[in-house]
Length: 324
Image (cartoon, rainbow, N blue to C red; front, top):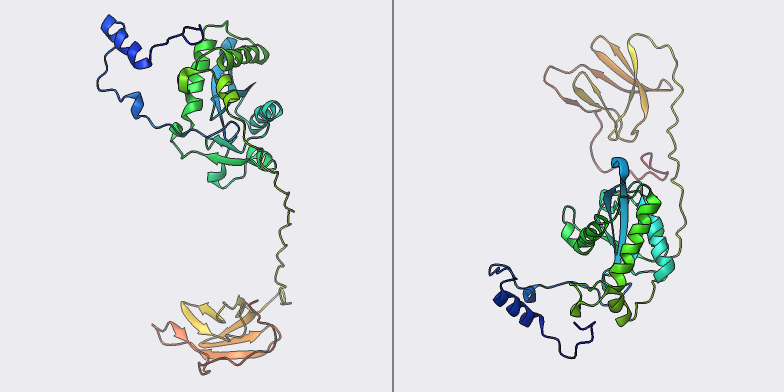
């Protein structure tokens, strides 16, 4: 009525009362009144964009994906893109298309899909990396909570109602032409029920100045992962006697033999030693042949055998620690 230029326009409540009295409106007393809704809307255009993708079908049952990018404040369709699949390359394409026409937003809201924002899975996606270079903050909704992107989900339904009345497209180019025609009608001609005064998204976009674009973040230098040095193995003869074996001391300087822990030397962690078993005698030498300890096999049930040295505070070693 306002667009037709009527001088006096009745309120929505008055129209609803008239429709109920005429019997052309359904009575739903249990339905929550619209006045009780609390909408979350960003204060200006380009403060936040919402990106999502939905499947559609071409002739022959071939499936494709339609990316729809809208402004959260004005519900303005900033860009749409048709692709064969939901990929990061297609998501970057629709974002760049919108930036070229309307500038850089401050935030980009999407779901947790792999092609959009897999940050909750510990992965930096290509789209997140691409928009991060422009200073755009990538945000997502909670997993399995599509209501966070409810404006875009509702936008999909409006698109489907339009496309279902059009001839079924046979190529991506034909479907893109139909989607572009829908975006024009949606932005400039169709009053939006979710906007105050039921104005068009174009009117809501023009009513408030867009926010300033974020500053691009400086590129961080990529540091190469340091190469871990492999410990140098001592020179050990290839052929050892049958009663001799090579063992490596633990961090505490012990070895395990037949379910018994033997203390060798706490100052030699991770060193390789030679263990010689001669009947009940156990001799432990270093790789140069120096005897470190000698033990006799303990009685059954013993689990630990010390090296006979007193336990106490260690003497300060002026050299570097062998554990470093």
